[in-house]
Image (cartoon, rainbow, N blue to C red; front, side, top):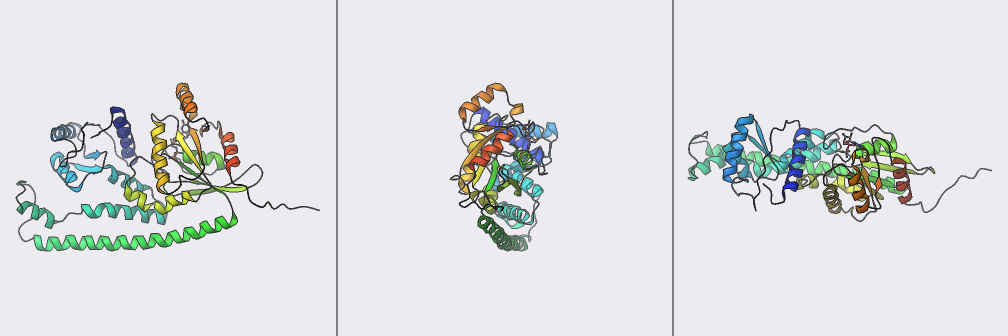
Length: 367
Ligand code: GDP
């Protein structure tokens, strides 16, 4: 379902397909429906659900992925009608984050986000039974028997309580890990080493540029979200000043709020940087939309007041017309190719020029 125009919907669906492939799925077919608002019961319209059912049958798909957040009842209704597993955008993104989290903190953050997503969606025998006895008209099919209701409700409550406990525990753990990181951060600011944060839309080429700039072996993947946990590298300016460069969590449109919440502490680190290097993929069909999406997330963690250096990457693969348009649009941006290395020296100089100068310069004077 979309309320926007066709190309917005196409871009969003292309991105969803890329996300699904990152999660290890094989994408068979896309289906778009234009409506003024989602159907409260089935998200897409009832007639479209039949079309979807037919596509599922003809392609042999085992999962339907929806480009939006489904309410628990929409999800249930769609699963009943299509007879396959239904996943929404949020669940898909959470799944990818879960696959990619490496550090202890990253893992805890993802688990917290997943449990918060799960809690309102948890269903037990109790609920489905009371619906059946409530005469909702859904006859037949699988269901519990009489007598399951009492213990069933109890089990659902136990599950909910267990999840709430786990959530509380994860929050405490994350908080203590954040404290450790803040101490490190405080040390950094005492040492007055300037920090540069590399931000940008997922797949823009942040890791590749970090590698180019520092010669470090950061994992580069043609997959969304290769970078989940921030990687920090040391770099030196041409006149020997030290600074750090950090790659940050990939940004996507409609990042689930559970993720923004869970990763807030990681994202907030961007807010402490002295400079944000905002990498844009010059080959993307709508780079302006990507820039807007990233700036929105940056604003959410208070990093929108920092100096920003816009960098258009992948110029080796960008056509000339687009290059001209982007140069007019962003006259102050630096145009680079992490692959060929073109513009990387210029980028390094641009970064150095924008680094804060130390208040006092200490020089060793040799006799
Ligand atoms: P990140 O998600 O922003 O960290 O992006 P990566 O650095 O992992 O790169 C994402 C994909 O874009 C990879 O397939 C890279 O090989 C590709 N890529 C990165 N830089 C360039 C570039 O300058 N030119 C081209 N053509 N591809 C690039």
